[in-house]
Length: 469
Image 1 (cartoon, rainbow, N blue to C red):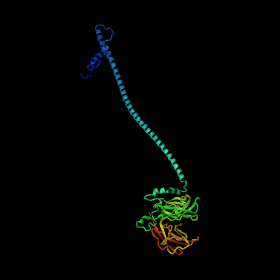
Image 2 (image 1 turned 90 degrees about the vertical axis):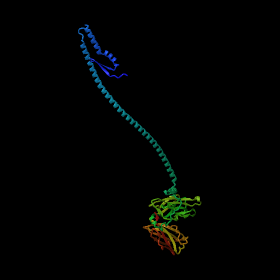
Image 3 (image 1 turned 30 degrees about the vertical axis):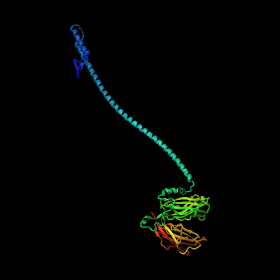
Image 4 (image 1 turned 45 degrees about the vertical axis):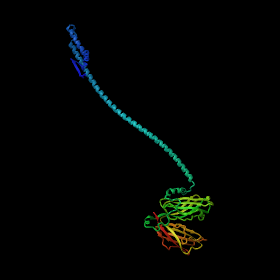
């Protein structure tokens, strides 16, 4: 196996020949034979041979001169070669450094360009996404705008239909009456309670309180029910009227009907233009009022010749709240009703009983029993109004009052109960009798307090009661 060889420099005088290994000897010989140095040497040998043979001409250069010339030429060429090499080396290094620097700068520029391209691509993606989102938002906004426009059309149409449906209503109270049953059922129809049920709370609940009741009872603001009057009727009706139906209060204590007036079709009240007041029979207990809503419900009809000819006299629902005065005239259907109600602050419930203790009511006299509080003399509550048919009493002598429950302010009022007796055939007043009682939070008023008409003595007792808070 041939061994690797190192380059060999063959020097011949000033001549240098570089050979590389064994294979380079032949090539070196050939190159050496062709080189200017070898040709100059051959020329010197030829001149020397000619000089020995006498063939050299006078004036021809000698071999030494020729050799010196050769050496000088070689030195000049070598110096030029060295200078050229130096120049080329310096230029090469500059070029290499410049190329490296250019490559580095190009690489860095490429990185920056790539990063910017990626940023531009990302920005383009984001811009595209935003554009798509904006387009989607625009579509959604368009859909919502269309839906809003449709909703407005529906609302406008509903309002128009509502106006058309409710244009018959002459007042808010009449309009509320048309929706009241549904409203009441949604709020209070639970645990078997129905719309037509009457209040399950009786009067005198806390007249005889237990020790625990002292912590659960209090005074309340209540509504004194004074009168309900048919103030006017429309031309399609004519006096007198046979009226039936119901007037009831629904308060915060149980929201059931506390009957104020109730007549069936077979037991109408006949009212005239001269006496247009309903004959009230309630409330059966005091009507409590608070900031929460309570109501007075009215549904009255006028009896016709047949049931199909009956007409709606009034349909109303009045809203009750603490501090509100309901007195006023309320139009509805074929009439306008005038209500006279009054709020009593810090009140207790007073249940009145009157019993004939001595004698009897005088013949030929009609009578009116009333109750009023000292702070509100205009709010006289009619307990009983009877004519020549005589004083209604039961077997025990207890007078059958139409109404027996009123409200009295506990701290600053006095309850006054009176009777007025008039001859049936005359308008003038015959006799007046009155008693005054200071209210209490519980118990029964002291015995022995009597009203007197002629020879008839009537004992008055009042049961006082607070309210459950």
